[in-house]
Length: 78
Image 1: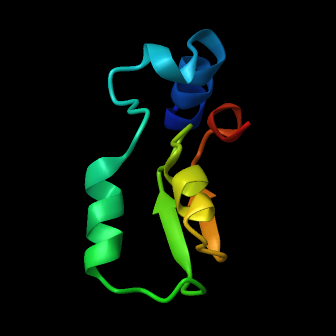
Image 2: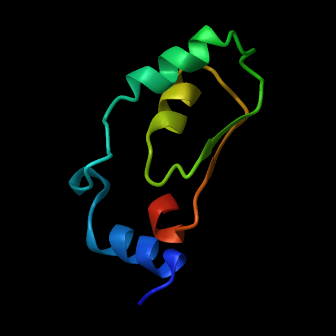
């Protein structure tokens, strides 16, 4: 049985982000929650277990400047 890292590497190697059930093209709820928190545009934000999330892209377009994604899978981040 593959370990967790291998599992997620294989998921993102074998499927495009759009093929996984959790992918959204616009992370509306996450963006709403970040707006509700009234963070400054230079506040650090991290998307933990972000995979191939586009949340970072949307936040950067809005002017947030200290945004990171953390994931166990290098394939997801690529």
